[in-house]
Image 1: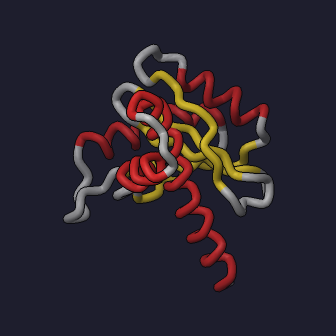
Image 2 (image 1 turned 135 degrees about the vertical axis):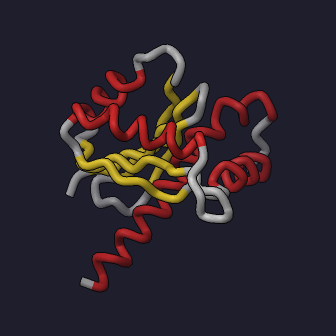
Length: 141
């Protein structure tokens, strides 16, 4: 089956999460600098090292269902990963950052550390949603 890699793209950082090999649990991994241009290469290294078979990119869809500039940026990231020759899918990521922020606050993480961790936790929340939806889809088959 292979691991799933979750990406939560932003203008400054890309949150990264990884599933376990059975695709049951998503865990925050790290964040990448979205501005320095090295993120595609770094994602490629993660894919190779962790035996990733699918990349799930968070797609920020507006409440009315439309896609704005952030969604276009997420789709561009997906297109830039085509060179990795791996399946890339998109997952609605509405409210994942708010969910991540709330979880970090309830866990007692201080404001400065929350800024560092919110992107990777949001990627984990989004990836977990995809894993659960995928499991449900496979149960119906």
